[in-house]
Length: 480
Ligand code: 5GP
Ligand code: MN
Ligand code: MN
Image (cartoon, rainbow, N blue to C red):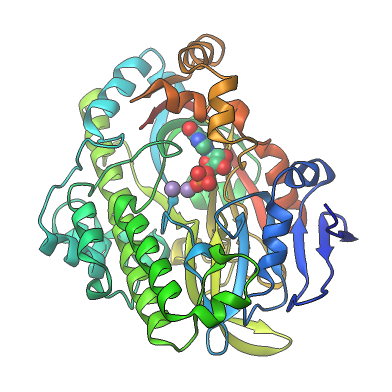
């Protein structure tokens, strides 16, 4: 609808700067993905993002991009941390929604025939759905401790081992978190959701590795064909959602001036250096820690479920965390821009950090090969493990895609699909065992509502922002 796109080179498209845009915008996509991106408001939202003060180089849409709240899902925006701003809408409501992958030494052969037992046991032992409580139910004091200490709290309380922390972004603890900046209401919502999947798009999936494309990196990541792995996708639950909401309201009250300059109120931002920007950053960091603890508790409980089903200790089954990475986050990072070091709030919303080999923030175990990146596909398609590519710092502030990306809304999905049919088909055709709290969720998350993850990963790989390492395929899946 009147948005100009110019091709820069293969897979790189640009919306040239015009009017009040502060920079151009870029879309990283193949022609087929671009056609899908053009179907909703993604391009308009991406263009709007370039109005944010302090936007650096360009606003960027990843190959899996689609329309979101204000800022596209699959969007990366680096905003100057001194003269720019920070935007809750550009982080997303589910603060530190993210994924973690755990390895095992089991093979698909060993699992076959046990799928139903495993999926039932996972479903019975891992809280999911809207209600349902959490693995730990505690008071606000405990929530506050989790908010400030992250996975360190889980370690002290027997829900983690030392190595789990090393294989998590920020080692499972974001510095600069302040529980006092998170509202009572948010903490109350978090209290009985510590260790819970939630509903909708969140899931726990047992997968088998179908392909290893890069033997050396595969070896460094501990991945082999036919191996069983576990992928966990969830975030900060009601606590993060409430925190986003709280700060959006505060911005409306305190920073009308900046809000009025923006083409979309959903991009509401607090000016860098303001008290509110500091407060939001401290609250967001706290919610980030909560989400890491959430995924950690779910993973540790999964180890216990496997112990019972396979009658072996989790250590014997080599159930180690490969990596945990956030995909809804803003982070103060130093990047080189036009030869100068700059402090930026890098907003990654539905985008994954993808730091290349040698970067000091990549865990030691992977520093020579690059940061593991985990890209889920759908409950009926492949998922991928990538490694941060050589070009990511130059092209995307060290980021790549986060999934296949949605093709249609939830409402549309419920009209197209029937949960029971989807489940039956997956089991009969692909031997994928899905168990969910509600049939509606299965319909809303049917494989057909997502884009082609192979194509998303092809673009990431070709651009050198995230390189293909391995592909997995679902075996068992539990959902809210
Ligand atoms: P989001 O965080 O934006 O909800 O989505 C993350 C990505 O997870 C989606 O873009 C989609 O590709 C993927 N996904 C959604 N449901 C499932 C599932 O049940 N299994 C797997 N492997 N991937 C999924
Ligand atoms: Mn989420
Ligand atoms: Mn997510």
